[in-house]
Length: 88
Image (cartoon, rainbow, N blue to C red):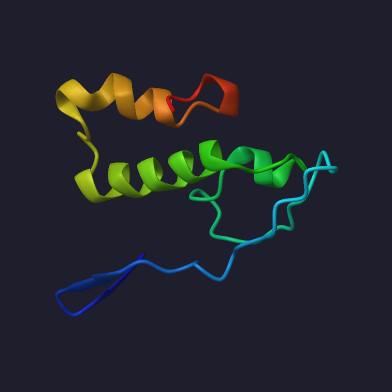
C-alpha cells in the first residue's frame, strides 16, 4: 500500500501464482514482508486463507494501533500464523 498525496493505492498485485493441485509447495518469495502470509515463507501452499491474512493485515494497518475495538478478535483470528486456524 502506498500513499500518493491523499490517494491510497494497493500494490504487490504482481505477486501472483498458478495453483498446482499436485504440489505441496508452489510459492516463491514475493510480496512485502509483514503483508505476505507466513506460509509463503516456509514453502507452503498458498490459497484463499493466504489472501485473508494479507487483506486483514492491510485493514489492521489502515485502522492503526488501536485497530479493531470490538473487531479485534475477528481480525486476530484472520491473521493466525497457521492458515487452518484463520476465519474463512
